[in-house]
Length: 497
Image (cartoon, rainbow, N blue to C red):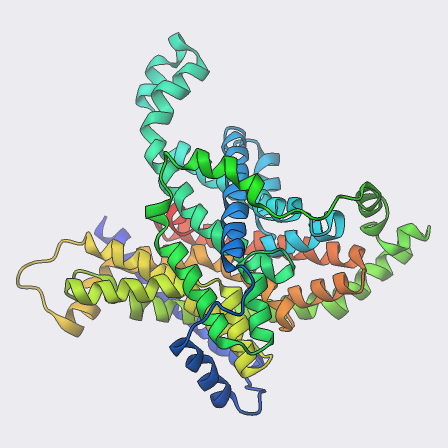
């Protein structure tokens, strides 16, 4: 048994070094340049705005905040209910495949798709959140059901029936796991809702992007602080007794000054997304030429850049997580210092990676560097938070070393397997996030998708989105294989989704 554990630990270290070597090999091919004339001056203006945050020039910021909450509440609720139903059917291969493809497409891309169908109707934002969240809920809820204790359920299901047994003997035992994960997804939903403002919906992101473009950094910081307070206070204002009130009020809060054109809906499905050669009546040779030209000129460069960006961001995420997790660990700092560490990590993980990249791109210009830093800061903070909590449960001897010796020889070797589990799970998520950063001008798959949508070539956009989804599914499959082969705990998946 000891030999088996030693072999697994050795494999974990070898895989780590392989990933680091891949990232180093990617460096010469990555664009890490800074393209602005005076980035330090712009950075100084940005942080000077932090000294005087102001909401006075923003028209009705409370309205934007309520819009953000309402979209998140309705979108996450719809995803939660749909995901719970799908979780009961998750053992069917077709359901698993469909959910994998749906959740592989970022909610911002879903928003861009639904914009072409419904315009700036609230349904665009609700579906953009609800659809991928339903697929994610289905996967995680199914795993909670699979890993839960089935003894009480198995004892009574033959006499009480499947439905009664499920609700009286199965669901109560797992209820807290469902609540914990759903609460986490609500926090994610608030981030997603804010980001949807960048495509025109009236959430906080809309006002934030406007303030950025106009250089109004006092307003930028005021909006960000407002968003941080919203996330940090979630445990105070999201109470079970208040949730029905929020859900009833949300449809009345969401602004709706547009209507759905059913002609656009019909046109989208019967014309816009049909490949051009098919619309022209060309044969298979014409279709193959269209696809090969699209793949070689757009999809392949996008795939290469997406993978380059992903691998560099993944390794930097790992280093940041290992450096930051002691900030909130009882094994390294006292209570006051941990409180400051918690505050820092809340700010870093609460800021959507899209907004972080937007800030850094504004300061440094378009290259992979802002995207790598943004992805690493956001995901590193998430993993550091999880690792800090995980390390608190480690039993430490009274005479154990302290300081750096405790970190390198006592703690990190014992939590390294769980660290890899978190990191490999975030791998697919980082790849999914690299695609949306293409909307900001970085030449990932998202850049070509956004360009196709801007040019109203929706057939090309849908093909590129499909390729993006398949690439994400491949990375997710590889990640699950590595976690399984190295016996990395799957509990990380529920916590780090």
